[in-house]
Structures are given as C-alpha cells and as structure tokens.
Image (tube, rainbow, N blue to C red):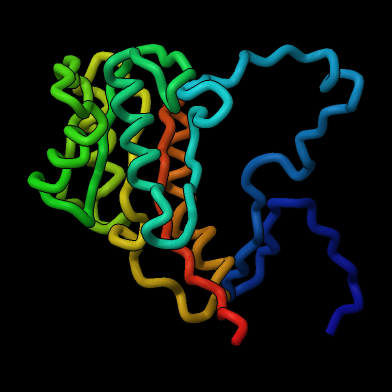
Length: 214
C-alpha cells in the first residue's frame, strides 16, 4: 500500500475505485452571530405592546394558581375590558381590540352567568361583540395553531387569546424527556405564534395544592 498522504479541502471528495465516500458539507455559517455590548446598549427597541398595562403584554404567559382562586374571573375581567375599550381591575384603561376566549371548562350557560355577574344591579351591558368565545378546541398538535391563525386574520385588531385551561389542549409528553424539557417543547409553537404576531396568549393553569401540615 502506498504511504502517500492525500489532503482534502472541505467539500472535496476523494476519488476511489468502486467506493463512495460521503463528505459532510456544513450548511449555514460556522460561527455564532455575535453582538458586542456597546452596540447592544446603543440599539433602540420598540416598546413592549401593552394589552393590559402592567399585567399583560404581547407573547405567551401562564396565569397559574390553585383551583377556585379566581383565575377565570380575572381573565374575563381583562377580556371584557380589552374588547370594550374599558377599564381592567377597576382602574387600568385598555385600548379596544379583539379577544378570543377559549373556555374548555364551562358551557355557554355558565359563561353568560359570569358575564352578567360583572354587571350587577341591572346595569346595561356594553357592546362586547369583539369578545368571542370557543368551548371546543383540538389539542395543540392537532390544528390548534392553525385555528388561532384563522381567527387572527379574520378580525380587525387581535389583542388577546385566553386558554382556559392549558391542560385541555396539552398533547402527551415525550417519555424520554423530563417534565421541564417536555413542557418547553410542547408550548414552544404557541409562544412563537404569540411573539411573532404580538398577540397576548394567556394560558390558565391549575396548580396542585401543597400538603397541609397536620
């Protein structure tokens, strides 16, 4: 056998009889895209899109707490305030916009009762035509994002989506991953959609109550 040394350049193939050799050809740049701190600090960024100033902004957020704590009431308060251009939490002015409330735990009768409870003592109801309700939805990996996108392009000014509760649209996790890794992978598409379009996606989540000391 010859002791000749052959040097290959990146991307070249060594011609050998009756043998095929696969050569790795990298796709894209081989270096990190870097930014030095001076340039970063000199950059200007648009302000965050406030949906409920001080509380809700464009992007995906989770409102978590034990059951019966009032998460749904809070979400409805925000949803009505945004849809009507009214006041959230009794003091926060909201710019009017379109809201989609995906309530997978309650039917139309209970939703109606809760909205009426927000306007007691015979108060007349404001125009809430920009707040729409959904009581059935597929899992996240079964067309949920596609339906969100169809809603987004069908309304004038999409501001917020409420998902009550997240567990109802959560697909099965990957058994090879721990809980954190699985959840991160599951919710990434929803976060990407919300961030890309500047829509606030508020997911409600029930936490387990801690053990009570005896």
